[in-house]
Length: 161
Image 1 (cartoon, helix red, strand yellow):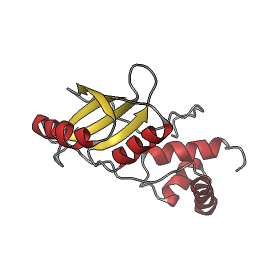
Image 2: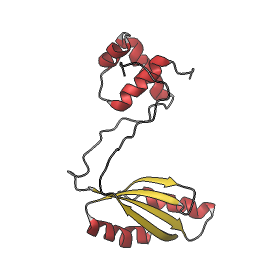
Image 3: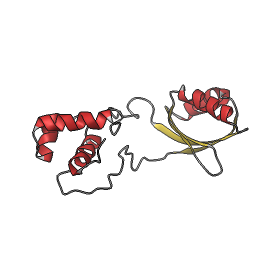
Image 4: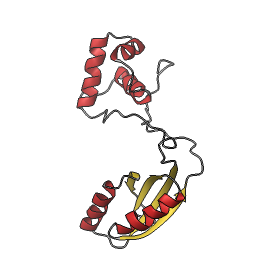
């Protein structure tokens, strides 16, 4: 993929803000005709700049309004143990994000559940059945201030974004 130009950056910024924009709407915002914009977007998708398109749902309305960040420390450390932990975590629906981190803990999980009772069941029965978990430290979200999946675009443009 050739180096991204200013139009590519603008398209990516617009798509991550609202992926439902049509090719025609994108084209109008970058002052190009729809065909080259369509080709650019397809090229950005093909080269992995756009991983996927998703709808952001209202967790509260769907019964998963309690967000918990859970720091996990493994009992033992080896490549096979780490891989097994990751494979098991990938199958758990309540875990919406998982990061391998540095510091006092090994992994940071973002867990979304209905309420405290659901989280207690999750810890005892679901997380408790994952092999090699040594400890879990939970932090409960009281209010969501900012939740963005946007990648910061380091190239800044005028008001047209």
